[in-house]
Image: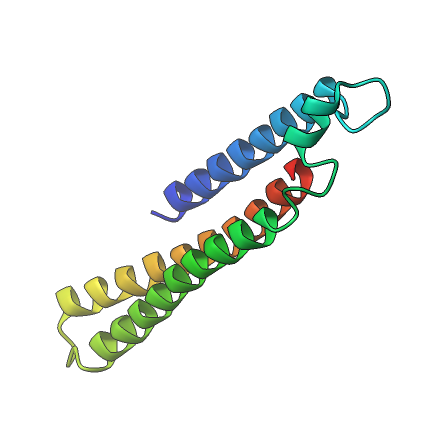
Length: 127
């Protein structure tokens, strides 16, 4: 079971690194639309003239709120798993179920933390 979790987390890390590489490569290849020589309409659409400055903080706040709610749910499940573990009264099936609940909730917390970092990185890189 432990090898399976480590394999899964390794796969997730590789996928995240691969996605970040693709995003960075795409950004580097696309160039900067705000440089001189670009049409005014393209500059305005890209937000170079300050027309879309209020959109970025709104997107970040919405996504941060969703991630915060997900993290809160994961913490609640850690607590539920802990209560189930304490009230299992030595029943092996209940103990195993409680351990799995805590494990999956902790994995959820890690995913929430990573998604917060990734979302902010991507938003700041693209916008």
